[in-house]
View 1: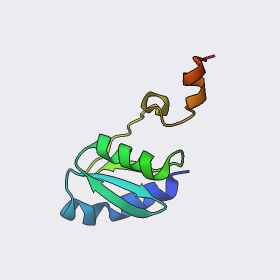
View 2: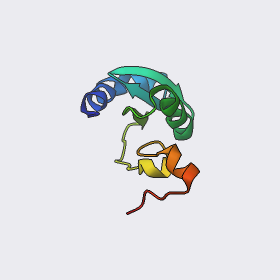
View 3: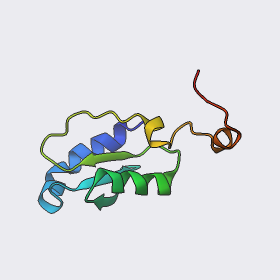
View 4: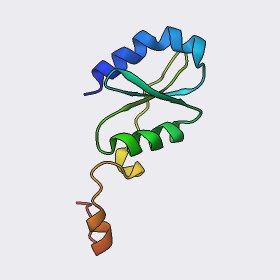
Length: 92
């Protein structure tokens, strides 16, 4: 799903390292949406703009280790606000 955005990030990385070293990139549909100081800022803006759609957040650095962030911990995927209101649990 995010393969093209990851490829775009990797192609753009050499130039971005010159312009935005150490910053965090928010990428959607092979476009640089924004550059942020922290992962949290980029994730917050991505969630605000794209809601449940996938988007890529990566730190602009020479090496990017694979990081997995469970979306449920962030409360942005498969979260049903009606369940929280009624007190229902989505755990199975």
